[in-house]
Image (cartoon, rainbow, N blue to C red; front, side, top):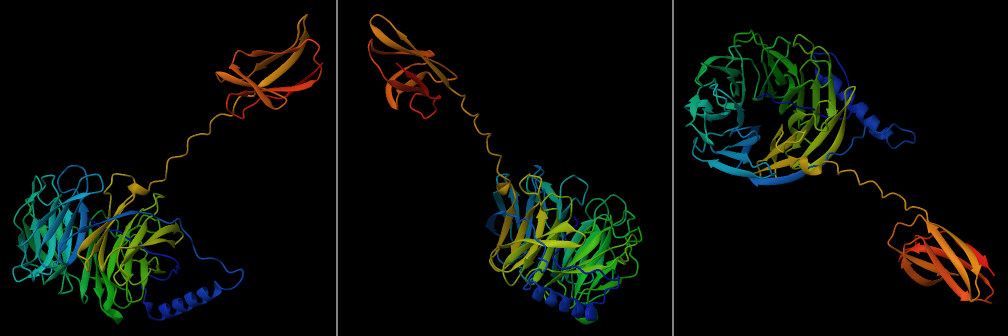
Length: 492
C-alpha cells in the first residue's frame, strides 16, 4: 500500500541536487522580507484557500499507539483501520458505516518490548483478503505478517528477520510475479526486501541503501517503468539529513542508493504527483525546520526537476497526501507533534499550496493516514495520538455542502376589482366584481373598514338607502391577509 502527501505556501524551484545549506539561508531571508512586506500598503497578500471542515471523532486505541493504516479488513466494502502499539499489541477498528467503529484488541502478539513502529495492509497470499504486516523489534525478527482468515480473524504472527530492528514496513509487488512482497526500513539504515512465494511466506532477498537513523519507507514507481521503487528517510544532520531512493532492477533487487539532501533531521516522506506532470514526486516533512520540501521528479527517477521549500505549519512530523477538495490536484496534510494538531494544505497549482485549516486533536500525534471511511467522494483522515492513546478520525461526510434552499413560492396572483352603481325604486346598489383571487373566502373593505367576509364567488353587492349620497372606495382582500386588490371609487 503506497503512501501519499504534500505541504504549503512559499515556493522556490531549484536544481535537483538540492543542497539546502546556503539556499535555505537565502530562502529564509526572502521569507522574512516577505513577512515584513505584508505590513506595507499595497503588498501582495499570501495565498488563501477555502477552509476544510471535518467532523472529528476520537477512539481509544490502547497504550502508546504508533502507526495506522486504512484498508478493508473484513471484506464488507468499507475501509477499516489497523493500529499498532509500541508495547506489542494490535488494534483493529471495523467500520460500521455510520461514523462509528467496532474495536478488536489483539494483545500479546509481540513482547511488550517489541517497539512496534509501522504497519501496512495488503493481500499477501492471493486469497482476496487483506493481510497485515508489522514492523517491530525483537531477537526473533523485525517484520511480522498476520494472514487474514476471514470473519475478522487473523493467523498467529509469522516473524521474519531483516538487517536490524525495523522502523517501518510497506507492501507491494517488487519482483513482478503478481504477488505482493514486503520492504522494511531498519536500524541498519538499509531497506530489507522480503519476497513472497505466493502463499504469504517471505524470504529475505537482500538489504539495500545507506543512511543514518532511517525511518518511513514508501514504495512507488519513480522512473515510470511500472515497477515499485523504494524511498526512505534518514533522520540525521548535515549530509546525513536526507532521503534515500532505490530504483528496482525489475527482479526484486535494487541499484545503487541515491541520497537527496533533506535538511537536518527530516521526519517523514510521502509520494505523489504534486505538479501534474505525470511523474511521482517526494514530499518531506521536517519538524526541526518547520518545512515541507517537495522534490520534483523527472522521468528517470533522478529528481532533477527542482524542489520547493514550503512553510509546513508548526513542526510537521508526519505527512500524507490526497485530493482533499476534489479539484483533481494532490494536496497534503501534516501533523504537529508539539502542538497536537493537523494542518491541511491545498494545491493551488504552479507550485503553490495554501493553508486550509488547522484542527487540534489530542496529545502528540505521530502518524497521519488518508483513506475513504465514509463512502463519499472525498478522502478522510486518521491521526494517531500517541500521548493520549487514541486515534482521531476526520470525516468529510458530515460537512458536505448543505442542499440548496427550496425555490421561493410564486408571487401571489394580482386581484383586480371593479365597481358600478345602480339605483332601484327602493335602494342604491354598489356592484363589486373581482378576478385573480384564489382563496376560498374574501374580505370586503369600504373606505378602509371591513364590512363583510364572503365566499369567493367573484361578486358582491353593497346596499345603501335609495336617496343616499357620498363617495366610497372599495377593495377586496384574501381573507385574513394583506393580499388585496386595487382600490376602486364610486360616488352618488
